[in-house]
Length: 393
Image (tube, rainbow, N blue to C red):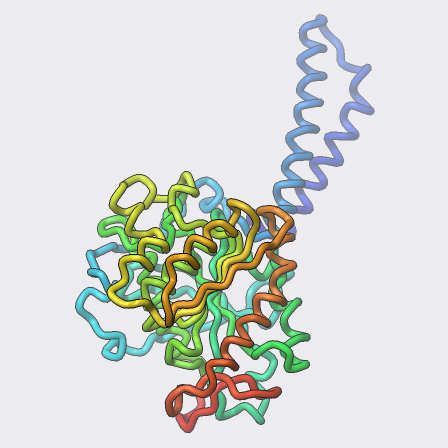
């Protein structure tokens, strides 16, 4: 029985109800010596407690997309087929333009998520990762008036643990953004949520670690190319952003700073810079990896300040201080904005930030103006996407 399915939730509720009924009907009917009666009654109490916790866990998991199944919960789900050394650029000597087109099929996700979310199992040809990716297309995508339009993309990274459904189930991102997109208040972004929990019971941290995982290449090369292969997405960095919360915020800032040739914007909500903030991080175990995967180090040691705009949100040590540190180290054309957001390190806080974050991204895209040629970014008014003369896809 699926961990995330309705049947299991119903079963858990039924067991919890039974756990209430049993003591009411059997408490005074237990026979035998005193120790036996005590053990029997303790078992009934324990059964009630376990089933109550089970109902809460299943409900929270379904609402927040923490684990996708039993193997994921038990730390037995590994999505790495191979992890060769791909070098500093994460390409292993390849060029993205030379990679063959991906051949993917997409299917709607299961209820209760937005029925317009599509999912596919992507085998990363460069990263050696095989995992699911969720894609949501804005309401304008199928509008005939937008048939020659390329759309900006936001890649969404979940916290740890988390699944591609975390943004959709927990933060309810499409529910909050679709009305704003229809009113022209938020750009019609394509939303892409790849799996980032790739190693069972360890956090890959969106890092490339030869012999272990190439998570950075997975999100910044394989997933990105799959989107531009199959959808009318902007292909230049001007139309790409990374956004995440908690561990996902760390990922968003890190991959954008490491690859300004692929992303122009990044949003970190309650994200950290030092990988050691996540005890299960694979990069926190080695001093060299810990330093190399710190966004602050990446920025300070860049050969030239990257053309990148970042937004850090949070309060105190929960993202705000980290943003201030990054802002102090930034030099043009790198720009870092920091916003203090109260509410704590929780899903409800990040969900409340969604409209403001995407309004901020919309403003940055509009402020950038049109890019070069077919890869233009976002025109004003209600046509916030990139027109192109390339054939429809």
